[in-house]
Amino acid sequence: MSQHERPPSARRDELLEQAYRYALAHGLAELSLRPLAAAVGSSPRVLLFLFGSKDQLIRALLGRARADELAALRAARAAGGGDDLAAAVRATWGWLVDPAHRPMLVLWVQAYARSLSEPDGPWAGFARQTVEDWLGLLGGIDGGTAGGTDAALGLTVLRGALLDLLATGDVERATAAVERYLSLIGSPAR
Amino acid sequence: MSQHERPPSARRDELLEQAYRYALAHGLAELSLRPLAAAVGSSPRVLLFLFGSKDQLIRALLGRARADELAALRAARAAGGGDDLAAAVRATWGWLVDPAHRPMLVLWVQAYARSLSEPDGPWAGFARQTVEDWLGLLGGIDGGTAGGTDAALGLTVLRGALLDLLATGDVERATAAVERYLSLIGSPAR
DNA sequence: CCACTACTGAAACGGTCGTTTCAGTGGCAG
DNA sequence: CTGCCACTGAAACGACCGTTTCAGTAGTGG
View 1: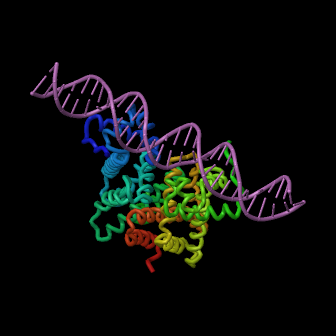
View 2: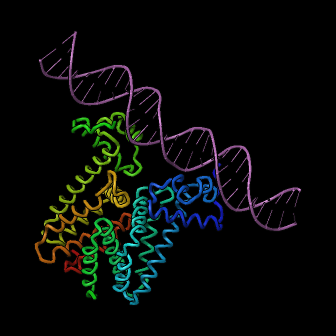
View 3: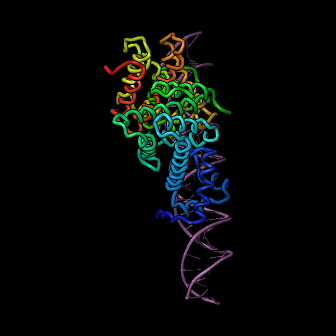
């Protein structure tokens, strides 16, 4: 018989937080219970007890990562000040290039890729989910008739530039591409 | 002692080809020797004998995938007819949206993500490699002074749109984003 | 016939995996 | 003290992993 997941509790939240930090450092794809448990000062037994199964632990971690990402993106957008698409793109990009966020973004790409190749399992729907998250964030900005397409292109540019950045670490080239896009939509570099 | 890789041979090429097809269907990340061997009518013993180790087999498969991708992209570019950036982007996008290429592109994203989170191992450098491949393909087109940045943005748009497409399957929205980009650089939809 | 190369089958080795079993802790309400 | 509850440790289970060992087989050139 498979164990059921426990409802949230102090211990569960604490372990989830530590597991999230571990995942940021070591990746989600190759995560296994014994090394994780050792790193967070627990045991596989306890992780299974609190989360029900490894799949449900992965799901919890994915949810945690998404919450982190959404909060950060919203904060970046708010700090941007402007309320048009260009300002939102600029603010978001400013957050994406921050080296401190690199591990989280690599984790994001990992989960994204995995959800594409495994339609079942805990990863399912992650890619689609984040597309909607980001689109909602950029799309909810301008009410123009062509806003949908414009927001979609902004999202596309940000994600493509992010991929370049993560692969090459070449901040300049990736930023130049984003700036080129911004100048094309009529928002010259500051 | 670890076995050495065998030089190319008829049997090796044949198995590599079958293994590549298997990887397209089942993914590269979770590939393991026994199921693969069973599917291609061989045995783990033979795969290890011909490829030396699983890591080297992965490397061979990655090389095979890259060759496939480069050949297809070059063909799409040649079929595009035009010799400017917009034509190249349009031709490349036309190839990317073809559902027949979906498995290969998912495989590509998988390998890309893996190479980001594991700087060592057989995946190392894959992401950087493909960035250079694609940039070379788009960048070698126009000799303009701003060609570098323009090509980088084109690449960025194609990759971002590809990610959207793979996640949502929404050909229309992804294509609309690409077309919006093309109209911004002065090449209206045909 | 013989040596040699290329390839193959069956079985095992040591390891890690997620998960389960069994047997407890300590704290707190009644 | 008693019962209950959230949590934990140690050990084992069966499955699967990459890899190795040992023992071949078919074909080819001398």
